[in-house]
Each structure stands twice: as structure tokens, then as C-alpha cells.
Image (cartoon, rainbow, N blue to C red; front, side):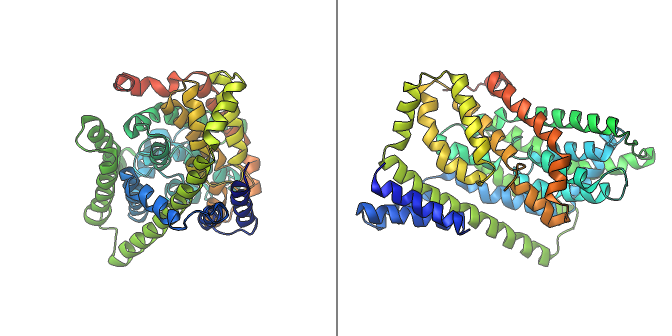
Length: 433
């Protein structure tokens, strides 16, 4: 490696050790690279501005963030919870099963694991902690595990970011996430059933039949959003990026006009929080553009592709290696950083081996969602701990079976690509490549 590249890595590592913002650490590393290489500092602004202004797909990110925050502030999470309780509440461990189903429904609206845990997840935890059969650790473990479904079933913010760096179709990625997301829900529900049976958890009391019409009506309108989004995207009524605007408008009309659950003060807080979250993501993207420029200038992706080619790896061996690396990195790094910095370095090797980029993207995103619930820096663990006070240690002790089930499903997705590709191919993906 050259001196400028060593300098970049040293500054980046120093920023992380000093616990500086990852975005500012990446920007500082990129500027240090330019300084040591003797290049014009104006290149930093040029790379960032060109990257941001030429990426129309990035408009979807702040709009999906806004949609999720509007739904969490507008009683929509509670309405979805009541609706799902009718469907699976009578199973053993009923409230835990309800949380998983709620995550499936909510994922079709927000595209964010953090929003899932902080919204409907918090509602479920409060309900579970009212009953002695649900320990705090178990309640927290179910919520963090089910929240990983959020960015897999469309819409998905990580899928949008992956499309940005890979050039893969956002629509195809959204479709490809449907079956894996539903399978994640199935394996988590199986895990809950095993635990609930072993602990002889009682069934929840049935919801009176006279309450069904009201609960179904309360949940019907929120459930319409995923249908509107997917139908609009795949009929060509609007693009995936425009779908984000539709999602935000839909959430605003439901929470503010139909349910009248938003005051002007609450709406201001929602816009403020959405702006803050979007700014954080945008800063990370800006820093990633700098690092990607440096790595590309040094020929790192091409060298990595040649190294993989020299090892004569098969597609399966390469995917297993990538998954092993990302599972380790996921314990320490943010999802956005891995998607925007490390994935671009692997894409030339994936293309060289003939790996479908949609399959690769979904596998990588599922891998990174698992990283959100693995210590020591699993973001979902910290969010749930901050919101509820439940010990991270307790959540990990109670959640090991959920991790085992998710790992097994990830391996099956690597082994059988059609789990990911069947739906997009049946809808025409592959014919247009």
C-alpha cells in the first residue's frame, strides 16, 4: 500500500479509537489522503457534491425516515399491534408472536430497523412487561430480533443505499427482499414457539368478537400503505424514489388528518428528528464518497478482484467468505459504513465471479441486519436498552436462539439463490438485464 492510503487508514482508525463521529472520521481521512498525495483539496467538495447531486435515488432516504417517524408519532403502531393481536395473539407466547407479525407489517411502511424497535417494538415491550411470564430480557430479545425484518421487506433504506453503490435495480432489490423477509418472520416465530412451549407460557386471553370490527377498521388504513407502494412501483405509476414521497404523504394524512393524532408541536418534533436523522446519514454518505474516491484511485477494488480470482474461489466460497467478514465487521461498524465503503470494494470481485448483484445485495443486507443485534456494538441492542432500560446482557442471554435461526436462514439464502431471486425473476427481473 502507498503512503497516502496508509495515512487514510491511520486517520480513520484514530477517529474511531477517539470515538469521533464516523462521518467526520471518514471526511478527515479523505482530506488527509488528498493532502499526503499532494492533490487539490477542492477535490473533496467535488467528489461529495457530484456524488450527492447525481444520486437521485438518495432522495428516498429522508422521505422514508420521515414516513417512519410520522407513523411512530401518530398512533399507527398501536393500531397495527391491535390488528396483529387478533391474528396470532392466541398462540403460546402470543405477545412475542404479535411483535414479529407487527414487524412484518411495519416493515412495509418504514424500511428502518431502528424505527421498528423504537415504534411498535416499544409498544410490544410495554405490553409484555405487564405479564410475569415474559421476562424483560426475553421481551427485549424478541423486539431486537424482529426489528431486523424492517429493512428486508420493502421499502428498505439499506437497499436504496446498496442500489446507489452497485447500480442494481431498486425495484428488483425491493422484490427480492419479500421472500427472505417473510422467511425471517417464520423462523423467528418458530423460535418463539419453541421457547414458549419449553417454558409453558400461557395463551393470551381472546379478543371479544364484538371488538373485531373496530380493531380491523383501525388497522385497515395503515395496512394499505405497503399495497399502495408495491402496486405503484411495479405498475410504473411511480418510481421507487417517488414511492418514498407517497409513503411520507400517506403517513402524514393518516396520522394528521384521519386519526388527528398529530399536534403542530408534535409535527414540528417529527420534522426536526427526521432532519437530524437524514443529516447523519447524508454526512456518512459524504464521507463514504471520499473514501471510495481514495480506494478507487489506489486501485483497491481491482486488486481485490484479482486476488479473489487468483484464489480460484467458487461463487459459494466467495459468498461464505464475504458473510464471515461482514458478520465480524457488523459487531463493530455501522450498516451505512459497510454498505457505502466496503461493499463497493467487493463488487468487482462479485461481478468477476458472475454473482447476481441483486442476490449479493439482499444477502449482504440480511447479514448486516444480524450485525445490529450482535455485541459489542449492536445498534438495536443499544436503542432498546436506552428506551426501556433492559440490560443488553439479558437480551443476549435470552436471544441466542433467534440469532441461530437467522444465521441458518442466511446460510440457506447463500446456498439457494432462488430464495432471493425467484420473486423478482417471476416479475420480469433478469429479462431486462
